[in-house]
Image (cartoon, rainbow, N blue to C red; front, side):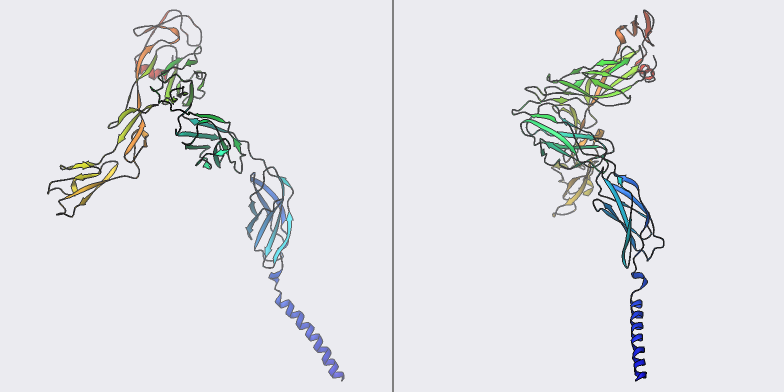
Length: 478
């Protein structure tokens, strides 16, 4: 009996030992969770809605780490990183909001405890400005294609929505900014006064903004096209300390209110106000200008071509110019389209060896005509199509336009085989004396005055040939 009891006691102890050993074997070390990372901190803001968070790996790790997770508070925005990483970017944050960030490590056994950073406030998005222009200017007819363009603060990305009142203009709701510029065209503005605006969407670093409202009038009656082109006739002028401005003049148009715009210039500081162009001192350069005329009660408004205004920092030996005519490149036709002179170039198929053009075909009557009669040109490719009767002597050419045309003078394609581009202004030059001087032949008589370059009373100034004047004036000499 004592032996039996002893065996029973041994069996019970053995069973307990076996169970304990089994539990230890079935729960491997990898099932443990990692310790908490250390040194969690916001390293920097990538932008106003993204935070770069860093940490140090737990030491000792406590378990084999498979990755990390970072979570923001508030918001619960997350990012994950590999086991070998100690940083990641948390996106989706709200600008000007205080956040803390917690980090925990994961293993095969699950997630370990987390450690948190100090609180930090995300930066606000930068203020932006949005400007809107609509052309052509002035009252327009129903169906007129109105070009809308906007410029947003440099560096901004995102989209622009063009609106008429509170309604997004069809096809102009999400125009992507390109280098701060966005444009869209519409022919669907209704009659009456349209209230146009441009709304910038904002991005991670830049706040939204809305342009000022532009009132654009569509006439309920049909207005006639301009009767004559608008041309700026103020082209060139000598500049002196006492004459840094010129009043701009134009020819043509129908009497609508005039406005001017400087589009570019080789000299910084060119500006136009109330029809007067101002230039900087002690430099020579070129201002590029456009004149715009508002619509009248009977005629549409219009804009001039871009016109250069050359100015020279000198006293005498001046020259000036005016537009005497317009011209086109070889093979182009000059015409006036209602607002400016344009050139039109049309590509046509070409036949040889006695063939003649019929539509896009070259037809032949000679039995000795072969595929060599098909001739390609710069804007299209010809190919021979033999007929079923007695090939290859009878047949015709088909002429296919190339997918992309190269238009003269940088013009744009206006049809399947047509290029349209601005005409070239031709200038005529004549001698002139600056600051009220009197010209006699090639001599300017100038008296009085003051300033750094003013000559003495009644000093005779010999005018130089035109080519010399251009050369010296471009160097700013007097």
